[in-house]
Amino acid sequence: MTLRPTRIAATLAGLTGAAFLVAAASPQPTTVAPQEGAEAAPAAADEEADPLHESMEAMQRNLKALRKLMRDPAKKDEALAAVHEMEAAVLVGLAHVPEPIEKLEGSALIAHDVAYKRLMASVYTTLLDMEIALDEGDADALKTLYRALGGQKKEGHQTYIDGK
Ligand code: HEM
Image (tube, rainbow, N blue to C red):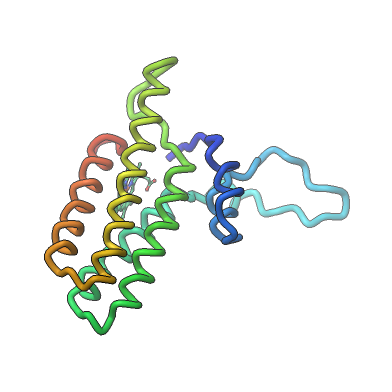
């Protein structure tokens, strides 16, 4: 999937101290020539790096883990760690807006990109609510929020993945 860097990556760099997140959330320029004497990054690895795909795999992995973890109050810390990983993945997703599945230009393209980021932001808000529900041991709220994540995933995939 082709990605367009957004200015949000620069903003994120100022918001978080997590170096790994900044590295993942900041699309790297691919056309900068290596400095003399510096080891050139292998071109193939650069081309294959797909931060949005990797962030989605992280979402999937942690969502699956969360399903079991959130049922066991003794696993609260592990469940919170899974939510934190999903939050980091959402920030990467926010910084890597996919190409629209149909060609768009001008205002339509801006609206597409904003809608994508709004949906990602709503996933982030759901995850914040999950942190509170985990802390309070609110099993009903957790079930509702888990279902909400599933709905947001479905909406995101129907709207932003070609053919799904
Ligand atoms: C809990 C929420 C989510 C989970 C667990 C999730 C999981 C995944 C997974 C596993 C893939 C890879 C699919 C494949 O390779 O066939 C994927 C791809 C993708 N998802 Fe999500 N997703 C979530 C939410 C979202 C949302 C909210 C959006 C949009 C706002 C979104 C947009 C995308 C896009 C554009 C791709 C294609 C990127 C790529 O793999 O190259 N996803 N997602």
